[in-house]
Image 1 (spheres, helix red, strand yellow):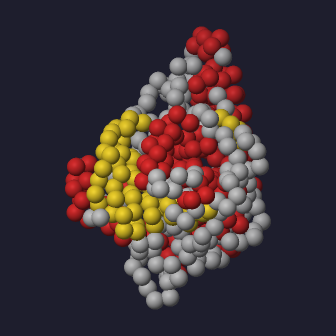
Image 2 (tube, rainbow, N blue to C red):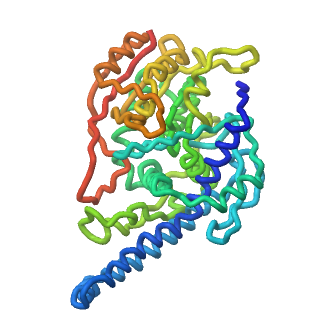
Image 3 (cartoon, rainbow, N blue to C red):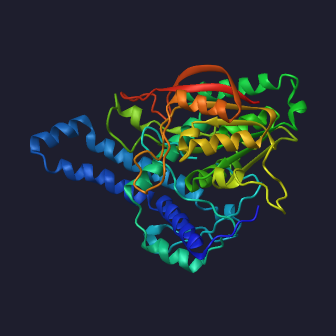
Length: 421
């Protein structure tokens, strides 16, 4: 569906995307500076205290964290070394510290193998950007802006959350947390289409996964034989998932250190410094004939627009199943989310949900509207819109947590299967 955006829209999108690239590039500088603050704090202490810290190996630990930061930085450079994800064959971005900014470009809403929604709990993090179609940046403008941009703490927090998301979706370490959410959804999907018991018989069953994150749930669904499409909004996730899905040649090809950014609530040094190997499976190893794609952009813009003349694929009634995992609370207006899901499903189609209600726009500073319902109200609303809800249960789960931390958040997530009446 063709959409026209103003020059201001395009300029804002260029600015946001270049800010994201700059955040990736300046990770090492930012993180090393934060760790160096700890070194400076040592010098404020009496000599006796310094000696005690040396006996504990505290300075050595700081050096180990520095080395881990540099390993992360090399991995993050790989992620932003592929701007062709956005439809342009560009030179790889230079390190921001060199005062030579790389050029980046956006891509349109296309069906292709580029992949992935940042649901950073427990903080209220949500990307407010949109991946606009027909937005081709003036690369000189992007480069000029990128030289000037200094990432904020919020930017870096989103980047750190992306590293943790890799653990959840693509590591052996994240399997238990991942499967707590994904397995009930996949089981419900297979049960709903029990007349299609083999992967070969499911190839024409279309499944949508909005808020696809780094793409693992959508990948797993495609691996079951379904024709699966993910939808993602966040540039952080889109860039990161492109690397893992399209530029990975071996299991455990990459090493990251996702837990080095905080020294709080750690039982020992290993809990912070242990490396994570990703991915735990080879994303390119889907069975022959698999259908797996990811569309970049805002869920409501892509799937919520009514049929227009010339639209080659109206979304209404086009999907046999919609799977929402930690997604529906990203809505500004939950009514519209549920209305869209209902409209795009085929008659008798299934909506499978799991997640909390951490309304992302509650108390936002951007003057965005936010409709915040409780769980009972959401279910009543779903029934009023035309869903028949069944298999309701509560599933306790963590989200991108450090399993060895002294502090953990457990969500009592709401799971259900709902059919379109």
